Image (cartoon, rainbow, N blue to C red; front, side, top):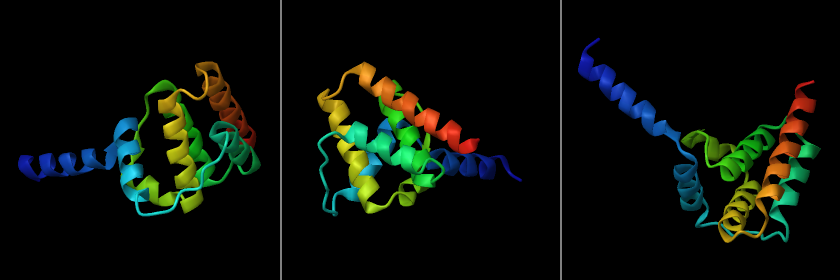
Amino acid sequence: MTEQGTELRSAAGAREFLSPVQFQQEVRRVIRFRSQVLCENPLAEAVKRIEQNPAYTQSRLLTRILAALTYQQGEFRRAEIAALDAETLAMVITLMDAYAAGKSTRDEWIRAVDAANAAQVGADG
């Protein structure tokens, strides 16, 4: 294997991983052609959805998204956006907007992440 081939593969693989900010930009790009359903309290709705079905792939991803918004860290694959259905994508956009607007306190975000993580632990049994 040539050094150049290895570098190209590494560069291609690096593009597949997105920072939380890049992930948000990509979600907005994907959803811009879809109608969005607004919810009054997206934080509570997200936690409720996670608690109802914590083992679902979407719930696990939603938990990671909550944590990424709250702590401004994490890593996502571009392909993970495809795992979200239209309703969940709309919820993610609403969460991103709510975070940016400061509609909930930092403590509320931390409690939401803690509740989501607790639901995930319960699902893993």
